[in-house]
Amino acid sequence: MAKKVLDQRFKVLSIETSCDETSVALLDYAERGTQYAVRLRHHETATQIPIHRRFGGVVPEVAARTHVAELVSLLDRAKIISSGKRSTFDAIAVTKGPGLATALRVGVEAARTLAMLTGKPIVGVNHLEGHLASAWLVPENRRRWEFPILALLVSGGHSELVLMRDFCSYKVVGRTRDDAAGEAFDKTAKLLGLPYPGGPEMSKQAKTGNPKAFDLPRPMLKDKSLDMSFSGLKTAVRVLVDKLGLESKHAVRGTRYDLPDLCASIQAAITDVLVEKTIRAAKLHRPKCIIMVGGVSANSELQEKMARCVKAELPDVRMLKPPSGFYTDNAAMIAAAGLWRLRKGKTDAWKKLDAEPELDL
Ligand code: KG4
Ligand code: ZN
Image (tube, rainbow, N blue to C red):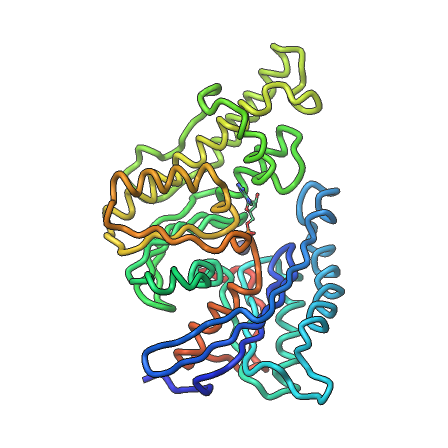
């Protein structure tokens, strides 16, 4: 039996600093019998995207320094220590990994300091579990939430198919063997001269393009395993860009030649693989629900294609989506995952908690 560490009513303060978003949230939890209520009291995210855009990607040292400055302001605005010096939270959840070592350490050290000063319990959260929990932030999803759940977790650093057997109990049933889907978007977008992060830019351009204009590879699509691979796509796009630049006398970079068609074709190749592998995994593992989480799941083409295929091929499976605006990194999802752990009595000793940049699910 898990030991109870908190009352049935408590507030979780959460901190997220794993990459290029600094985020702080306060989540209320109340439990009565088998019923419980969850309410997001406060949530604020400071994005560093405009800062890193100049460099074409995230610069770890710059990210860490910016987190330090932003986190102090965000914690101050969240009023986590009231004027009477009483803390306004009962537990702390902080992203411990995976992510950029220097960036993670900023959040972890701030959280450890708060735990030391207030004596409140602290829990280190796996960022990937945070993404899984993002879909649980929607009240309607919580009502329809039933395990086993199959999650397609697609972000800048990860592309995984995760079978969730219960809260805090996961099995990775498929994963990318090289680049993540977000990386495939970002790297191919860079080849086309689009700004960082490439995913949202490519999705915008693709809206007016023809997805069949260019025949791009769908790696491992026919492969029986649930694994994926996206590095071949990046190479194919590089070859295509060079060829188009030569034949058309228009460099794709700069002139935007064929840009919407190229973007739509790249997006179609990535989303075809993600949808096909998810459907295959669902047929094999028979989940009650499917969730799509992580930055790439904000992609509207992916959402529409997945919804269409699930409806046609798996009519009994429920599709649950995170709230819009919660696909990319945020502290609310870290509070939710922290809550899952706290409800099971899982906490860490602040003296021992450390950043784990290579953490797996
Ligand atoms: O989950 P996330 O915010 O950070 C990580 O944990 O990595 O995901 C960021 C990734 C980036 O690669 C970004 O290009 C991608 O999500 N992304 C998108 C879209 N919005 C964000 N990719 C495709 N379409 C989008 N609309
Ligand atoms: Zn993330």
